[in-house]
Image (tube, rainbow, N blue to C red; front, side, top):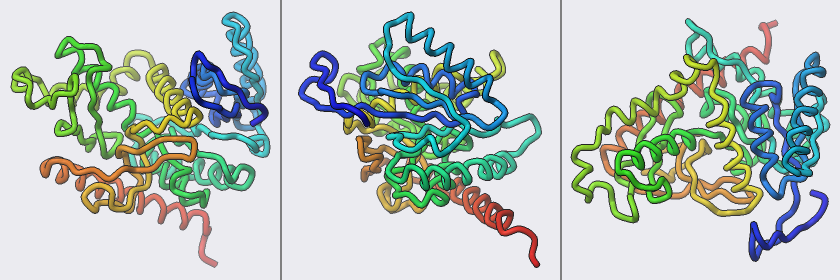
Length: 339
């Protein structure tokens, strides 16, 4: 946070602080593209690329490639790289993409425990060197990793959140806009719950041009099941075709970073710790609508249809069970063999 600016063309009536953003796991595809997308945010002064020891040459190459990109488009964002977590100090937001991807035959629980070992150590270190930062979790399974990050960082709940179903919600929004042949900005919808198979689309909260979707005659013909399955399978389809999802997650990450740094107070669907905001269901990190600003994320209290409550409760119980299993196994592993 070096200087203060007022950009009358981009952010009228606001005085915003220039910020440093760190991307941990920057040698991965999502981390690399997220860094590029974040560089286009007008109030980001510095991006720090963090990777593990032994990846120095790759980090240096990525940094120089980004600098060439900046030179080509007249971007003056400062770019640095490091393998030392101490350098994260001063970051307004730390984007955590570090972790392993799921491989064939691996269970979700196995992946969760594997990545929990990585995330827990990172979260502890971040909290030590940058206690006022926000940790933005991307590592999958994102709801479970958000809980791990929250527990092991010891930060406040509003400071630790995950990408969750934000991109899923945008995918559904796009499908609905295409079906009704309207601009996506006319569609307001969201998906809550797990970023995974038990996600819950909120048709009761979906509007087109301000009109409740169920009040439109065409709604009776909308292929709801096919749309939801398309959202659920989108990531797998992309991975099967090109090896990894990059552009969608990268842009979604940048959108949330911009919302926070711009203190925009938008209501977005992210993975956050909830208590009783959704029909008294909670005590877990899972995706819900949250007010997002410079101070972090704040889940909002909502009421939804009873059928959606049932689905959301099932999704919460699923994620809570996996989260408890992972945290218990992680604590056991960290404690070491009994003496």
